[in-house]
Length: 277
Image (cartoon, rainbow, N blue to C red; front, side, top):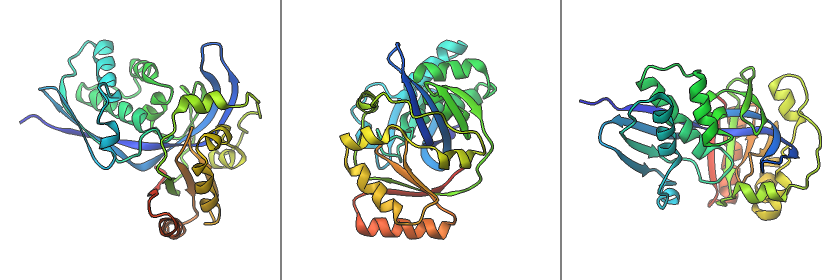
């Protein structure tokens, strides 16, 4: 019987995201602190007859996609390493789509990791990161899968010390936000770099420069942040280009109480209780 391999695709959050400049190539020069959660999507890989199935609570949002990032990652891997990547893929889509927590990028990175495992390749192989970079700016960070400072487009990574299992609450008001319009609406003002220090210290001193343009496009983001602010977090911020926001708490009981409060106030919102990994 052909073995099925299972790979997690953890949610990504940007603890801070400083936009420094617009670049001539259409991208933006960034400084961002990446962190990852214990929870996220799940990818199952069975070598053999090709197929691609999406399951889970957010499967319908990807139902019309003809070329998912998972399949693009598999093709890129096959081209880079000269191997067959024919397989039946099953993606458990547990994270909302276009929500600033790296869902598609995390799925692509999971595909690269599971293919590397299957073919006996090291996960720090430079060719693997080159494939990841070609797929999207967040894919290298999701492939690394640990706290890191990202510069350039976010693809140049400096691993940072682990933060520990800090309780995290993710909240999305049911809004999908496209990254392009948010970056386009950035006001072009350089508000300075991410400071030196410990990872959490740097996060607390940081900001998300995309929050203001994202809130202008999707005002519901402000409603989320207002509700999170009154739950006593050590940090509450929008992740990426939105619309998902996160809050870090000093204890799991605080996080749980915050989640209960938000679910009671906004039962239609998506909430995920997790921890930093």
